[in-house]
Length: 108
Figure 1 (tube, rainbow, N blue to C red):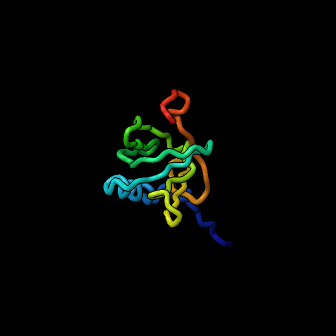
Figure 2 (cartoon, helix red, strand yellow; figure 1 turned 120 degrees about the vertical axis):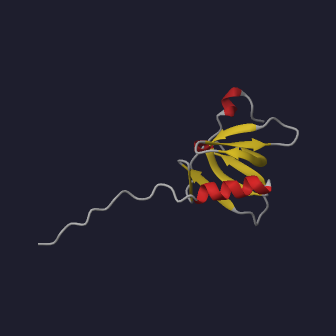
Figure 3 (cartoon, rainbow, N blue to C red; figure 1 turned 90 degrees about the vertical axis):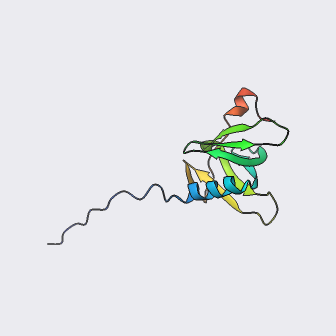
């Protein structure tokens, strides 16, 4: 009789998203954040946690953006830029996320 091997749940966090966002924040890399509704906002990531990022913008109001509202983050926004998608608070290759401030009128 074969014994069943119990599998645990898959790892939810690899820590890679936090390392990547910390790197962008520490280096103040200009990024373009594409939201689920198609809007693109630019700036640099000043702060982040498990639910949101703070995007600091030159000459415009800073934005607090929920990660669930982000489709992609592109470094520098150029054609050879690195794209990262965020889904449910994790880095992913599939889209998923939007802007909370849009409803409050803070986005442009």
